[in-house]
Image (tube, rainbow, N blue to C red):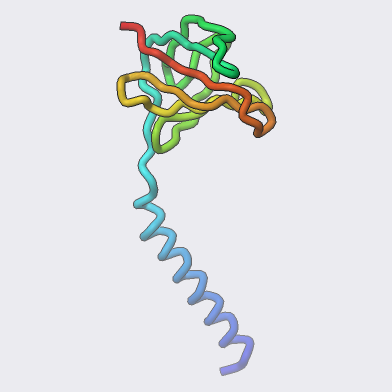
Length: 118
């Protein structure tokens, strides 16, 4: 058997092993949660001061505030990119609501809470 043929066989075996491992272990990935649909009161905070409080809702996988923003699921809630560089993270508070940091350009600038309307 030539060196070239042996190299191709080894490369093929390594690729097959990698694909097999990804298939086996990739299907048991981390579970993801969703931000539950419903109506909320959205409060934005900075330095402990309420900047804005308004009605919000989650429907069809989107946070509806001034516009409609797709929610990207995470293991404990989700996050929304309100505009380029401005992200809010929503982590379940265990009581039906969500809270988390707000970032601008990767720097934490405040927080958001979503309190369910009952």
